[in-house]
Image (cartoon, rainbow, N blue to C red; front, side):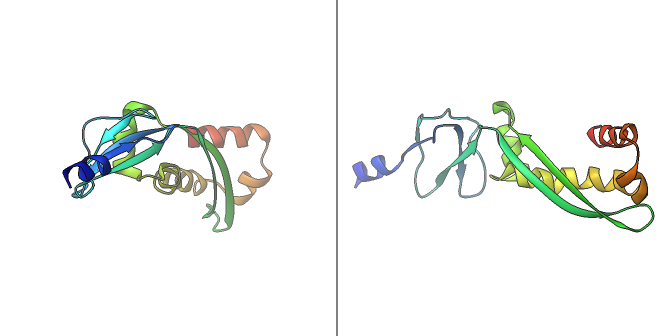
Amino acid sequence: TLSLLALSSMKRVTPGHVGLIEDWQGNLRPFIYDDSQMVLAIPIWHRIVNIRLIPVKKRFIKEYSTKDGKDVEVRLVCRLQPKVHWVPEIYYKFGKDYGRGFLEKEATVDISEVVKNYTFAELVSGSEEKVEAIAEEINL
């Protein structure tokens, strides 16, 4: 039985990912494991969490209210790739699907704050310079 426990506790990190070990209470070990690395995790108390390092392309579509009370649909396509040293913090804040969690928690707040400062006409039929200035305001 001891050899069965030893064999079932060896886990391999998926290629293109980094691995974190999470215990049953939700605490993470302080190590980040590279792809294709063999990790020892006791199956009853620990589980391995694979976080993707390959860039993720996420689409985000949501409606917001403008300054004059009209609704405008914002379509956003972004490419997200976490830095390895930030992976534990990203997992704590946004979960395994960090792209969707980031867009829902962080980008929603920024976009809604900017959109409610402008009218529908300014956002839709404004000059190209005005639209670029609004995009830069979201980036800040």
